[in-house]
Figure 1 (cartoon, rainbow, N blue to C red):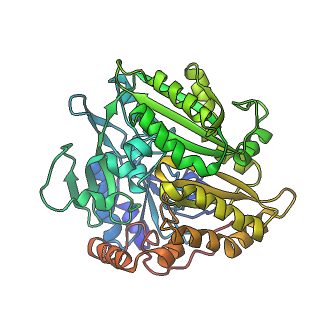
Figure 2 (cartoon, rainbow, N blue to C red):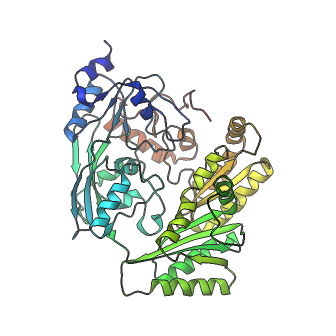
Length: 481
């Protein structure tokens, strides 16, 4: 009996899943680019069982892959193909421990599905501001481990900005209990933030205390056609001023992205009659029953149309109308999948430089791969653009993606770096972006990351090969594009 079998045999059998038909859903990454293997999936029911699992596996020299909803775009939650790692799923840790309405906070298990937390907050006339396209399946522990972004970063920040406290099982099985939901706690290093964005490489998040916000009384949503992409930051600034910084989302949508979706989903309709090359989905919200937010947005649109910034627009008349707008935005990735998938570039630059980046990156693609189809959309308010490239119709999809990533993508990432931006705005590093991190990461920061990994996980048992390479910086040979 090898080390992994010895470890598994000493754990409670009711938390060990060996049926490979069930296990297989935990070993394929979200984008179906990578398939790993594992002897078993462990599904602990309590924090104590997570500690027991970690002590047992690391004690036998077995590596651990923590997994939430398995929605990572970078294979951060997928085991390797050699079957040597054991997946630990947090899905059964799904209890809401406390909602403190007066403190605007909630304390929850890491396995809680994000949409369920939205519902629980809403029942208390509050909201959890983190909002993602995958919120029906992603779990809050994974959201924090990847420092998820989403559509409300402009007003509420990234996932790390919502964290008041964390509970983490460390690689030696001990428990870091820093769950106190205090707004002020200046008592030494803020160690909990080490685990936000660490993708499970420093420990397993088992619980979190999160900031809540008051539920909006008024929400105004508008789908706008803009005359020139160069005016993105101007229009955002004006929207914030007119609404008193009530803008929660300011999403850019290129017509090419919209066309990819509409071509494959005939039931969907354009929000505006006239076709424009560039669109903005704007949403503003306030919890006040006194402020005239609708009037502020109406005044904004009148002003922007008068100046020619906005050429056409529609304001959602009701919740169904609003949902139609957001359905288009949230399903843009599906449009890419239905057209053969895409080469993804999750890039961020300063908001003031976003339009320039899109223009220059688009020119790179047109000059180097004129047959490619651009699909560009993103979160203008925080400078994050999803600059994706779809293979041309009728070509070899796999070959196109491989050659594009090798020959053109480096120029796009270099452009972002030259503009002071990042190659990874919200997807994280996982396994697939290790080389990019090595190329564009600050040497001092990378050295500190390696020291932290060595200090907390000296044997490298916690999610090895992700974010900070343990053995090799090379990508596995079974990563398929």
